[in-house]
Amino acid sequence: QVQLVESGGGLVLPGGSLGLSCAASGSIFRINVMAWYRQAPGKQRDLVAAITTRGRTHYADSVKGRFTISRDNAKNTVYLQMNSLKPEDTAVYYCNAGDVFLAPNDYWGQGTQVTVSS
Image (cartoon, rainbow, N blue to C red; front, side):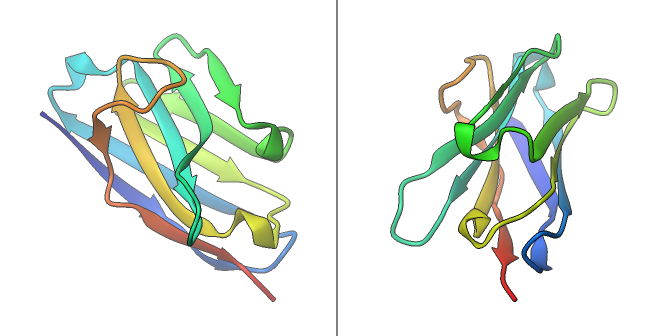
């Protein structure tokens, strides 16, 4: 089993910045890919960004140039730096981990709320 603990999130003004982090523990040898998904009320859960152990990354078109995913393999932690936030970025953000790139894996964090509002 893999446990994912997220931190960060909160309320931010449009145009502001926020950082999320997600620390993995347990059977971390199972993890090649770490990713962030988000789910807004009434909408499906969508991939925001993903990163492999070797540093290959993928971003949703809606966040390219604004969000940056990074990873500290020694700490088994993935980060999401979010800049130039927009109200439409408001959602619950979930950390996800596993072995498959660009598809939901089995392990999820508890989710953290990000609200972009004036």
